[in-house]
Image (tube, rainbow, N blue to C red; front, top):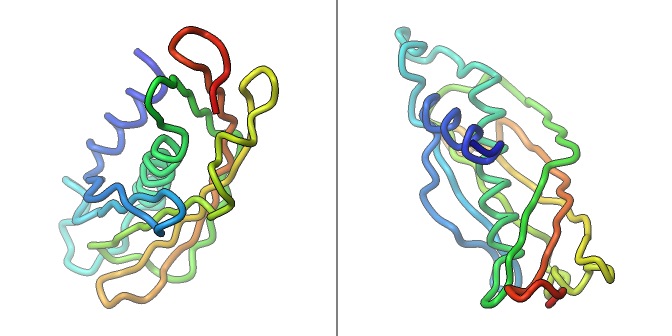
Length: 153
């Protein structure tokens, strides 16, 4: 089982649901929600555990990163290399995370001769009233290759 599969299973276990894979017109993004935490939210208004919010940020950023490197005739892998998160306030459920990849042209054009490149995904988490409750950035190492094995941007 890959690390991606484990991350996806953990995110689903805590209640993270990806609801959209869209972003700005010139970039890629994703949106996910955390409605409630099964077995942990027995008190209405109780804050979400930070681990669940981290899973929300990771999952949303991963979906945006994968969309950014996807393309016909191309295989790509993304591996997180660093994550930063700032919690701004207590985080009541439901919360929604929106991730975006900066609009700087076709991102795979950054690949070196081996097909490797780095990029970041920004994530904003808002609470039920639409107020920002957390922000995050996930840095990725990507490897891209064409189906036949050579690099294709």
